[in-house]
Image 1 (tube, rainbow over the protein chains, first blue to last red):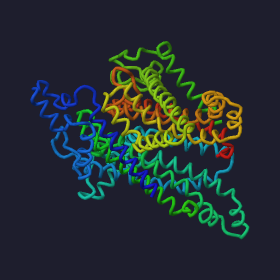
Image 2: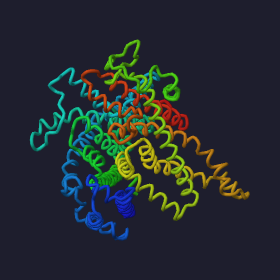
Image 3: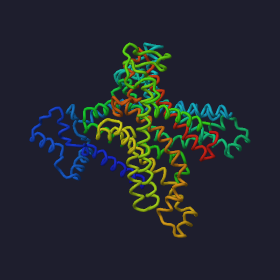
Image 4: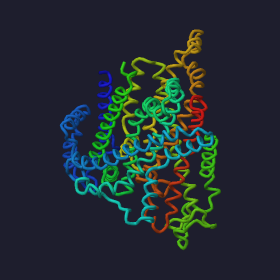
Length: 310
Length: 266
């Protein structure tokens, strides 16, 4: 219950902060929004101010905005004149697919990799594993994306395709086009997850119950998977929430490389065009999704660790 | 070992960046139209870009921006976030609750989105990027310092200092801060590593450092346009970003291991 209260507070705080973006624009926001039309008359400016409610007290402005937002009305785009929510929904589907696939790929690759890394015990091997995993964590995913695209275009020109094909339009082509971006976004996460798993596996393997399991004559695989891994997965799961944020950030940038019409392209374009309602709504909605994802990870954590439940 | 390697990388890159105006082989904007898009050679160690500018020189100057923006933002976050964390731990009660709730809210935003939002409010540029990254990193330092400061507050030697009548500010400065130094050092180094990636991402998106200031992220974005003619500028600008971030990460990782013996040999 307390956690739910915290959650509501964070959501409320995020909405206030995001709301501030539109109100804190230096100079007159209205003048900026009328933009190209530099010779806007006093009446036009006043009408616009009234239309977006800038002539109201701050708290009223916020509550009005919040009320509309809760009903799904996040305002209209200043560039297209259409409701921002629809455009964000379309773009979010692209980013969500990239982020989700990258998260899945990262987990699938990181578990065996982390186990293999935990098996390396020699000092030289440990050092090599450590250097490699830290390099993997710090590699800029957008650079990796560019390099992958270049390598594929040189080696297998037919496979190097950019641009978006919807999952509903052509599922196979959709996945084909996402192979490179998802790989680029996932790699730093693979390195980070595998490293965490390696550390916690090594810790778990040093425990007494592992010695007991081995003494009972269980096979090394059973000891590793059933006893060590089950306990070592906790830090791994905690990390998933944080990583979802990183993967999302990676996706936002990598979308530029592959010309994917996701949230990254939407928000960068909106910043350039000073489409503030779009910027505002994109940031708020994405943040709320992350707050929700992190709470889910917390719940998952409680579910798999009986000790936390108490 | 990793710590030493990280230290060498950071030192090397920092020197290259600091000394760029004196040691770079060419001027950062010096163009040689006849030597465009060249592969690495004795004359141009890392090749040239589409304007015939020396890539090595551009990298050295780009590193200056990368270091300046990242250091500025992380130091700002350390000072504001660290102070807030200490004050929260020390005052406890309502102050603690308010500060930490605010930190929770800021922390909820994905860093890149918060940064983009702040840049949208100002205007794209190196300083806006520094401010944006600094604000996004502030809650990290508030959280990192609050927890150990809380433990210290209840520790015997601090209680003893209080009992003999040492004043609050003196306790914080003389007894608490030195005990937090190592944690601060590790968090600062690791934050620098990620801040460099954020700066490079923002510049890559065209929201960070603006031309004519050389920037590695922007260089990488621009070099995509002539990748098929010459991949070198893209390869090297990305490698430079990777190395800078890697250096700080190795350094922070090594320091962390020193502090926490349980992690030895991981």
